[in-house]
Image 1 (cartoon, rainbow, N blue to C red):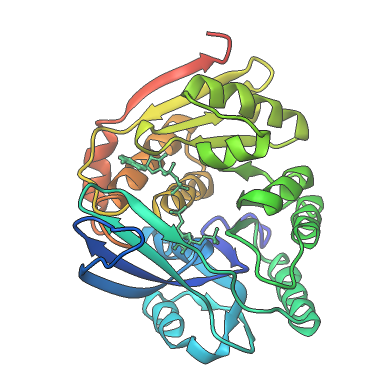
Image 2: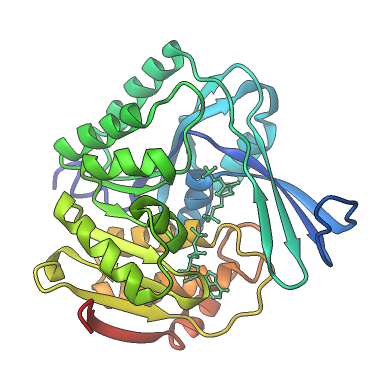
Length: 327
Ligand SMILES: Nc1ncnc2c1ncn2[C@@H]1O[C@H](COP(=O)(O)OP(=O)(O)O)[C@@H](O)[C@H]1O
Ligand SMILES: O=P(O)(O)OC[C@H]1O[C@](O)(COP(=O)(O)O)[C@@H](O)[C@@H]1O
């Protein structure tokens, strides 16, 4: 067996712009005046880091890379060591950003995401060496989150393109200009949420059917898997095999008690990646990742507290399978 064929348990997550998430729980947020938090937590996060945590807890052999500020790396290092993931982050001068998440009793979350560190040309070159070295032994790459200063959408897209040309499976989850540029670079799977998709197409998408219509156009860009997450309404997925017929799969989770929705999208990405790494059928991957992400809203931060709970919830996922955007 070749090195790559035996590498289905191995995955690289790329977080170009990680963050420490400062989460505060409040009864209600009083915008423009004082609000009192009942409790708070500060933990290492950012899209690829969250995906890495979930994948690692599912049993994957994970390597994390991207750019990490030297000044406040301690809790990241601790997390990577606790998870036993391979830490290939490039260290850069300065501190990794702190993103603020204010969670109200109602479940509503207000996110304040900061810009991040400055990445130098030397750090970029070090990262490229590391990335393409990892490509020698890995097939799955998850590139997730926003871009720090110093990394243009075009540069990010060029990495996706190179990995694609090497036959790698790149799962790409970003927003705004980075998403727009990355979509042209043949990622293997994308997962915008409905808001990100609406921003990309430049119009409101008020229903799953409207999202489906808008996302169908992305298939023309040669993206094999188009997944759109719809918050409490679930997940839509257009696979390569069904693109010709425009037949979407759709899974809906049961009603959950929401503690925090932060990290639900990352958890969904991790679930989708895991199903593919395991070679599961589409239905199983979809119901598993929908259940995993639905469970994620019942906690602050990401992680898999109990695989039995995921399996139990998976049985309660409603699947409409497959549907056409013409209905
Ligand atoms: N309130 C909720 N109840 C149940 N599941 C949810 C809820 N919010 C999110 N999810 C699950 O998490 C997935 C990702 O959430 P979503 O909010 O769409 O992504 P993002 O976090 O990227 O904005 C959804 O597709 C769904 O499966
Ligand atoms: O990289 P971005 O787009 O600024 O987002 C970073 C934020 O997204 C998160 O990864 C959560 O993402 P999701 O809610 O989409 O899963 C936070 O941990 C982090 O603060």
